[in-house]
Amino acid sequence: MKVFQYLKHVLFAVFVSVTMVVLGSGAVHADEIPDYRLQISPAKEDIGELKPGEVRTGKFKVQNTGSKQFEFKVGVSPYTVIDQHYTPDYNKNNQYTDIVNWVTFSQDSGTVSPNGEVEITYEIKVPTDVSAGGQYALLTAETVSDQNNTGGSGVVTVNRVGMILYSNVQGKTRKTGSIIENKVPSFLFNPPVSATSIVENTGNTHANAEYVLQVYPLFGNEEVYTNEENPMTLTILPETQRFNTVTWPNAPHLGIFRVKQTVTIFGETSVTEKVVFLCPIWFMFIVLAIIFCAIFWIVTRIRARKNR
Image (cartoon, rainbow, N blue to C red):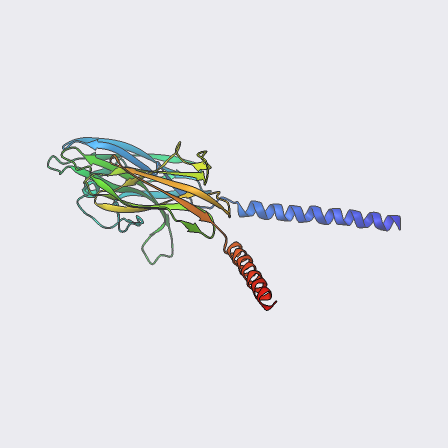
């Protein structure tokens, strides 16, 4: 019997070991590096003020974080947005995307090895008669691969990434804007606690809007949460409106707090502060049930006294 029990323990240990190995190998397989993974660095860059007639150069890196070598090509597209949620549009041209026609590259294509990178130099030749104001573009990199069965096309696009380029042509610029909306909800069934806003840029150059969220207990001035040291900052393009949400990520499910949001753009500041009730719907039903029972008990007692 002892030998049989010993064998059972050994077989169980072997089974556990094999299971762990299989699960471990599955995890490694799940984390395998893909064949083709393209990145561009930096993801965005503000090159500041451009002078009419100036030639400006800059650099970005095309990086391969995949497991196979691939070819790539670079290009430039206009950068605009189509709604308050800043859905990007890389096809629409307007007065703020003329820079697309001013950009050239040190090379239009290349090859990058796994864990390697290729540095690309871009050159911007600003016309002498250009109007003042913001100019925006997307510098792109696309992976391409040769295919034998493409019907004669020869090249298939695999992936595309881009770097947003912000700039401003020197001259008479308008730096005007307003805060259209600054809202904090009064009642929430579930976390997180969020404040929303809509900021409008009515000028002809981009600007940064700053968002600060502060949360206090109902009674007291000691902050429960704040992003004051690292406020959210978003770029607002000219002649656009931008909707934004700032969130207290680790809010509890139940509580009463004072929530304050401060939004700033072009020196204008809007402050909204409200008392926010965080109450799960199940808790509200419990409270209503208790109130109903209390009322029922009081009514029953009153009727009982009248009957006496």
